[in-house]
Length: 204
Image: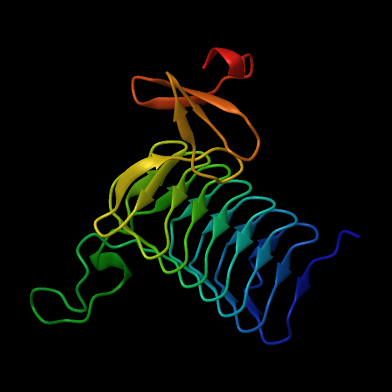
């Protein structure tokens, strides 16, 4: 089945493009030129700003607010109430007191790489990039780039460890990091974590 499904109360602009088997739940709004990949689920009361791009097989939970020009890669998770902002110097009015319009500020986007997860009510302050398979904890406020596989929590957001593809926090064993769920082994080279497909657990 290739058709998309949008709840009758959802507002999907005529220029938005939805991939096959994508679902948009009640009261969500997808603005002009939004692009969403296949098999993505968009929960209730979400907002996607004009031109936002979301990959395939993503899960966007209820009340997430994703402002342009955000770009989410494939397999990204966004928890309920999370916000991806786009204004470095937010003001309602200009210096002369006039109401700010689209030409009075420059939107800056958040980029979320493949497989990364954004926890419930986290706030990501653009511009920044979240690396592949990283996890942002619930309620975190993040204003700088996040490394692949990093676990970031708190306000201000800080890295407290690493996570693997399963999402579980990795355990350090000798000079490697091991997933307690899958047994996958990751190596840290100068602060960059990579999956070691040839690792022997007896040697770490």
